[in-house]
Length: 257
Image 1 (cartoon, one colour):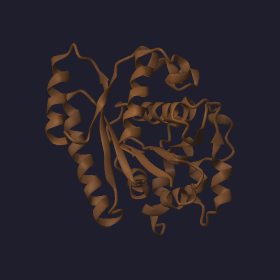
Image 2: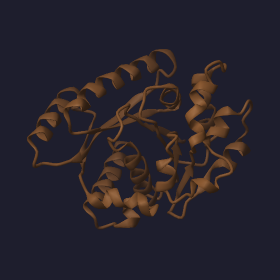
Image 3: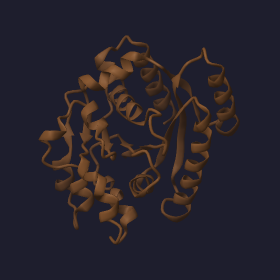
Image 4: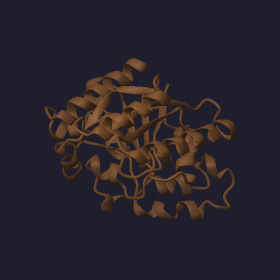
């Protein structure tokens, strides 16, 4: 049975895409699971981070979202195999920018992603890389997901954003998806030398003690470099600190299943 996980936080620059791509790649490589990354961000960073040239795409997630009717063949035709073991991508393009406006008057507009995920039988895990907002696309992703993984950066404003997101999760549970769970809260860009880092970590633990991943993702230049080469960190430099951290996260994630 396929498990759908949204990687979400309305704050930008917290490591959503980095986590969606690298965690997916590590699970696919190390644990032999078939994994799909669904890129729901118009910037398409997860798409290029998986080595796909966005300029050459004929079909993207936008086409599936806007289709009046959708078949399993339509979904399969939009998915691309990457050159990385067991890893596929449902790519995104800038067309997605207008999707929220175009879907304003559509019936069951909050269920457009669920139409897609209901046809994904071939994967063990689907990670949805959500845009940095709590708009219709993120709402769609949460309505279609079994759980949400929340990356947060160790800074003061992270806590404020976290409370907004958890409120959204509660609303989605109430109105659209009663079975939605918080998969876990992941601390990213960790720098143990900073006092603020320890303070934020302590605050997050107060509220999410049982949901926090023990693994933390460090600040690591190799993680930052990998996307420009179109590779997940475990392929770009599998001995980097960042790769070790994502391997550990994959291990912890699989243990939780």
